[in-house]
Amino acid sequence: MGKTGLFDLERQFSFYGAYHSNQINILIHTLFVWPIAFTLLVLLYFTPVLIEFPSGFDSIGRGVLALNMGFVFTVIYSLFYIAMDKKAGSLAAFLCFLCWVGASFLASSLGYSLAWKVVLAAQLLCWTGQFIGHGVFEKRAPALLDNLVQAFLMAPFFVVLEVLQTLFDYEPYPGFRTSVKSRIEAEIQEWQEKKQKKVS
Image (cartoon, rainbow, N blue to C red; front, side, top):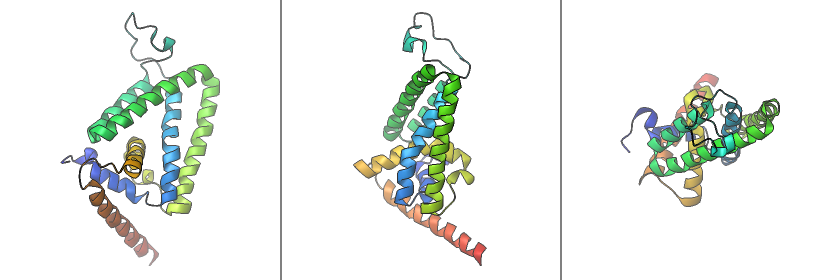
């Protein structure tokens, strides 16, 4: 509460919610957003090692875990999510590190020549599902066309927050859900009015 700009959770989640108000589209995103992040980490496993593990730690991950760009992205995303909301952000950060570890082991066992094909197939499937969710069910273009940072940086966290709200009635702070709902309705109404003006 009281955070501004990129860290204003209420404003950012309202923006996201305005593009994800249809329940089927929300379900599609819940299923596909994290696999997109996971498979990107598989690909990033093959980036150069930036920092070597200190001597004595060579056995970590049996030589599989590497401090490369995948690790850097994992840390950046994790810290950002925790800054947005400590509880939900900590869960999202934990999931990020689980994905990094899992992606590292998968990439190591597949090897680059097979891994990039698996990543490509998964990315095509997941992105196709998301575009279908927006085109067929939401009937609105994805958020990435209006805000690239929002789409790529925040989408995994917002999926976590959406699930926590739905299953456990979680709120980062009292009144969050009510405030977000009214802002989402206002954003959708504004979008519909702009759409109507273009038609007329």
